[in-house]
Length: 399
Image (tube, rainbow, N blue to C red):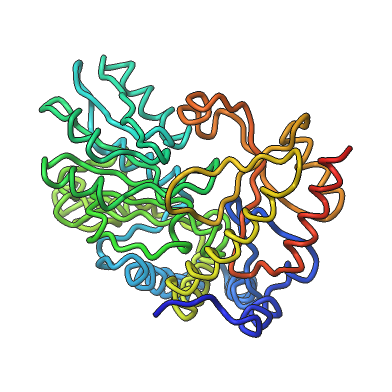
């Protein structure tokens, strides 16, 4: 049975995390703090490159890339052949979306209200060129995407259902598996942006029923910035033709013609960052050793405590929606801009995030929000850190 980590376990993990000794970090949803072992894995490879030559050190790098692929497959309950290693969430999502091919006039894309702004940009550009449409799936009373409302919208012109599982602007968790059941029942491609979910929630691609799932590794996984995961369901791969290929994704055959890889590596490039993959392999192994179910229990416990105490501060409004919530805690302080709150806390050595409309435009506009402050927790977060953050917010709220 999953359970929160003990204080001793948290202290032990923090002792192996250099950043935990020097900063009060509440921006884990932006990028979390890597462990010493992850840093050492990257340093060791860079040293091999410096002493052996970068290309000569590539053999060890390739081994670690494949190790990262195997570990990522375990994390997502996927096959290694269904995993591509990318440079980040947008890189993976954008490549998969572009591989759907040209759009036609009248075709429809259905999205949740919480869709990431970068994904919307890619979809809108393609839709505008072709005369396709992007339509928003209604949300239920909790703010989450409504599977029944989605089903009522479907017809034979719907070519894609896209969902951002955990929004960037707050703690809501969308019902990814329920949306997947609708998509599978009607045979409609289903893309999940799991940027905030991977490493924070248990993710089972078979259970959620997606065709494509993407996530960066710098957030809850505590991997290196510049790494990401792209899952493509094996039976769906043949429907995707990458917009860009090279010698790795589509090597030339004996006749000189490109031969697309028959696995998700068709979305990888020949030029990669082996040192980052070494760090990624270590970060994935650490998450699996802790257990994502336990990570989820710990983050949920910490986030609930923070929400409850924030709500008691006069002048502070907690903005999280949803029946089930994540480790992202959104709030505003009356009379203060979120970016100003972020800067003021940074002056005190406390890191938080602040989001404007472009990050989650549909949801922000629907709720009349122009900005939010965001304190995102990790399984590394302690009561002492929460107390420090709350003290800083109290001071700002009474100015």
